[in-house]
Image (cartoon, rainbow over all chains, first blue to last red):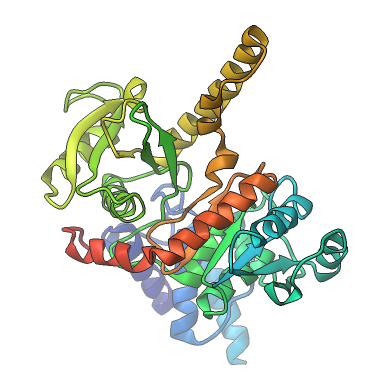
Length: 81
Length: 321
C-alpha cells in the first residue's frame, strides 16, 4: 500500500504544484483544493502505471487520500489473485 | 469538414440541436455527425429533407446530466454523447465537437480525451462582448474554472491573446484584468497576485485593471477573470440585456437592433481553449439559431487552425510547465 500511496501523492503533487510531503494518508482532497478532475487525472495516470482499469466508483465517497488509496489497493489485490 | 454535434445535451435537446444542424447544412459544405440516441435522432430527422451524405448518425446510449459530477460521470458513462462526440475529434473522424450540455462534462471530456496543451492547467471558456467601437472584446474565463490560481489567470491571458489575434485579426491584443478598481493594489488576493504575473510577462500586451463599467468601452481586447466572476458577469449581462430590450419594447413599441448584439444566440458558442482539439461550448438554453451559429464558430475555428496557433503562442510565452 505504501508504494501505491507514494505514487498517488507524487502524481497529485505534480498536478497541484505542491511538495509530495505535504500530502499524507489523512489529507483531505478539499483541504488541498483537489477537485474531481484532479483525482480522476491521478487515477488515470495510476491506471497507466499498473495497466489496469480501476472500478468507476463515486469519487465523492473518497474524501481523503487514505480512503482512496485503500480502495485502489483492495482492487489491485483482487486483480492479482 | 466534419463537425460532431452532441444532440443530447441542453435544455432543448435533441429537437433544437437537430433543427440548428439542418439549418446550417444549407450554408456550408461541412458534414455533421449527430451524436446521440439513434432512434430518437432518426425520428426527429423525419421532419426534414436533407442530403443523407452530409448528415450521419453516431449512436451514443448515455447522456451526462447537468447535476452529475463531471469527472465521475465521464468515467462511469463511457458511451455518453459528449464522450463519443469528443472521441470522434480525438480519432480524427471529426474536426470539432459542439455541445449545449453540461459544461463541466464537456471540459472533463476535453481534458481526458483530447488532452491539455503543455503549460495549461485547465481549459478556460471565452465569450465575445460587444463594444462601443462596433467591435468585440474577449472575456476569459466565463465559467469553466470557478476557483483559479494566479498562474491560471496568466495562462488565460496568453490563450485569450492568441485567440483574439487569430480569430479577430488583432495584432498585439490589449489585455486587461477585471477588477474592482484600476490601481495595481486593488482587489482580492487573486487579483493582486495575478496583476503581478501579468505585468511581468512580456509576451502579452497587459495594460492593467479594468472595471466592470468599462468592459463595453473597447479599451481592452482581452478581459481576464476567474470563471466564477466571469460567469456571474455573463449571466448578469444577459439578464440586463433582456430587461432593457423588454423595457425598450414597451416604451418604443419595438426592440432596437442593438440588442441583437447582446443576444447569445447570434454568437452561438465559444471554444474551450488550451486543449488539443476543438470543442465548442454553447449555452444550455440554445435553440436552433444558437446551434446554427455555434456550428459556424466551430467551422471558423477549424478553418483558422486555432489549435496550432494557440500552441505556437504557448511555445513563445514565458509560461512554465
